Image (cartoon, rainbow, N blue to C red; front, side, top):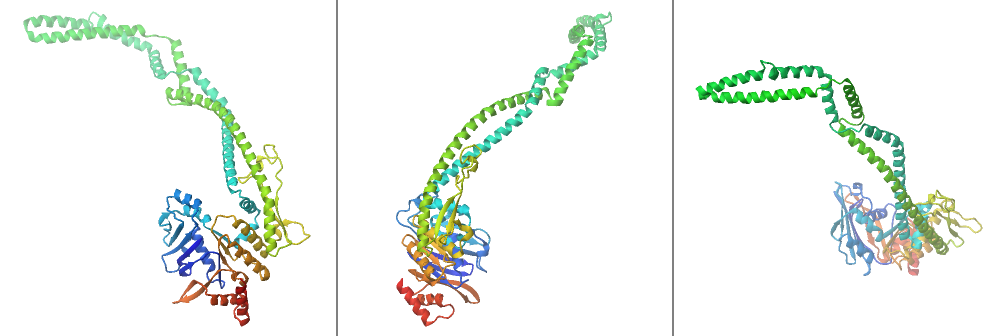
Length: 565
C-alpha cells in the first residue's frame, strides 16, 4: 500500500505530506482545488511522463516521493527488483526529481534507476481508475483485454503474441527469399551467358601482355631481321668485324705486355670484351632464327587480343578481374540453388509455426468463450447491485469463421497478435430491448457504473495493493451514488482504496477523509491537503450536501450519514 506521499514544488503545491491508511481513503475538495494535481504527481512515481511545465513557478526542480509498504510475501516484486540489483525488504521508496534543465532522476530505495524500470514497476504498485477510462469502454479493442484480465489469460495472450511475431518473422523471411529467387531467375540467363562467354574465351592471366609483345614482333619482323642481321655481320661475320678488330688489338697488347707488364691488364680486358662480343653475336644469330614473317599468325594474335579486349571492357580492367568476375557469377548461381533449398526449409518451418499458432489461438479462443460466460454473470451481478437490476450484459464474439489465406476455418489471415477473437461488450439497460453495442447506447452514469463493476471484479483478483478511483462516480447521484460508495467500500477489504469524489454518499463511506484546499499565501496560490477530524468531516459532508451555504439541516444530515457508516 501507499503509506506516505510527499510532493514538493509541483504545479501549485509548495509542499505536501500525505499519510494514507489502510482501507478506504476518501478525498474531496472544491473543483480546481488541486485533486487532479495529486493524481498527476502519483502518476510520476509510477513512471508517467514528466515536463518542466509541472515545476512550480520560480523553482528549479519538483520532487515527488512515495513510500510503499507490502506484505511479507511479495515474490513478484522481490524477483523484479532483485534482477535490477535493488535491495527490497517489504518497503519501497520511490523518488522522482524533475529538473527545469531536463536532467530528471529516478531513485528506488536510494539506488539510481531508469524510467524504464519505474514504468515496469508502476503497474505492480497502483491501479488508477479515472474518468478517462470510461472512454476505454467505448473502444471495442479494449474489451478483449478486460476479458483476458478477468479470465487470467494475460500470460497466454503474451505467449501467443510471441508465436505470432515468430510466424510473421518467418513469413517475411520467406517473402524476402522468394523475391530474391525471382530476381536471380531473371538474371539467370544473363549470368549463364556471361559465364559461358568467359569460359569459351578461356583467358590466362598475363596472356594479353605476352600477345601484345608477340604482335609487335610479327608486325615488325622484316625490320627486326634487318637489324639483327646487320648487327651479327658487324660484330662477327665481316672480315673487318668488331670481333676481328678486337682480336688483332688483343694480340698486339699481348706482345706489348711482354715488353711492358703494365699492358697486361689492358690485354685481359680486351680478351673479356672479345668474349662478350662473341656471346652477343651468337645471341643475335639465335634471335634471327626465331624471327617469323607469318601474316597468318599475326592475324590470329590480333583476333585473340580483340577477344581479350572485349572481355576486359565488359568484365574487368585486367584478365585477373575478368576471371574473378566469372567466379562471382558462378557463386551467384550457387546462391540460387542454396536459396531454393533454404526456401523449402523455411516454408516447412513456416507451416509448422502456422499450425502451432492456430492451435494455440484455438485453445485461447475456447478459454475466452468459457471465461466470457463467467464474466457476463459477474458483471450482471455487480450491475444489479449498482441499481441496474434489469440490465443484460453480454460479451459478443465476432464471427471469424471465414476462410483465411490458408483456406482453413478461422484462417491465419484473420490472426492478430492477440489471437483470432474480436469481442465487443453488448448491453441492454431496459427490459425488452435488444442487446446493443455498449459504445452506442450507454449513458455517462451507466458507463461509470459498468466501469466500477468491471474494476470491482478485476480488483478482487489483482495483485496490485492500491487502487485509486479518480471521480469514478461521474454521472451518478442519489441512491445510486450511495450504492456506488458501498461498492467502493467493499473493495477496501481487498485493497487500499483512495477515492476522489464530489458526492457525500461516497465521501461518508471512507475510514479516513482528506480535504484538498487552494489557498493564497504571500501572494502565491498554494494547494494543501489535510486529514479531517470527525467534526471537520461533518462540516465537509455537509458542504457536499448543501453547497455554498452549510445549513443546520445539512449538518444534521451529514452526522446521520456518517453515523450509518
